[in-house]
Amino acid sequence: MRFAFISDIHGNAVALEEVLHDIEKKQVDRIAVLGDIAYRGPEPSKSINLIRGLNTDVIKGNADQWVVRGVREGEVPQQALETMQQEQEWIRSQLNEEQISYLESLPTELTLEEEGVRLHAFHATPDSLFDVVLPNMKDNDLLAKLTTKKEAELYLYGHIHKAYERTVEGKTIINLGSVGLPFDGIAKASYVIIDIVAGQVQTSHVRVPYDLEKVCQQYEEFNYPNVEKMQNIIRSGRN
Image (cartoon, rainbow, N blue to C red; front, side, top):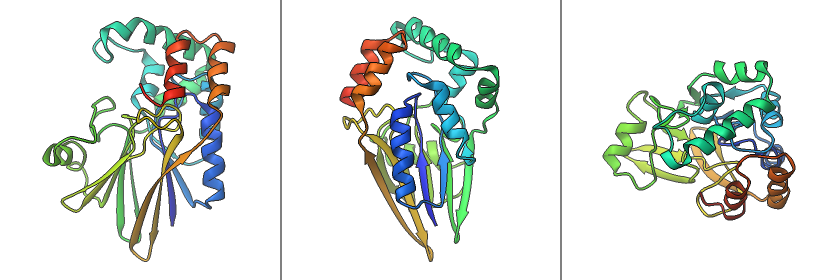
């Protein structure tokens, strides 16, 4: 069985389409989506429609929650709050109520099992859409934040936009990176493939190039409210 896990699309439908094409070429059996579909990108509606068209497992991220109920004080740096609230209003203006209801209805975690190998997937942590768990966290803290709710061999999450893999005490922890807004200095879409065959597990991060300048131009053409910052993130792969 070949799984593809994708996350943090952030309304970047150009990147998403390239990832989906790559997944198709790699003959993936099953796709799972770990949240943050629409907010902060120039094509939120198209991104939601592409994900819904997969007819697959999708869970909620913090940015999906923001689309539904707004960005609240304390959830982002104070100096960024007003701008991010303006962005949220623009995103909502691009969506219909049915799409917003879809985001609101998404579950917050996913458990899969194949040939005795269990995978537990969530957006940020099993208990929060917002907690930040970085790659350099101490082993015990990493285990406590990500692995204590359910027993599994692999734990997968998104949220931080920084792709990595660590194995601690027999538990493999994988961050998918981001399809639409990577923050790890590689300006390419990121996702993860997991192969499970006869009980053997093989994992790989995949980086997919896409037309960065097309997306940067879309921010301008569609009158997005935070153009320069978003263009800088797209071009540099850094927040």
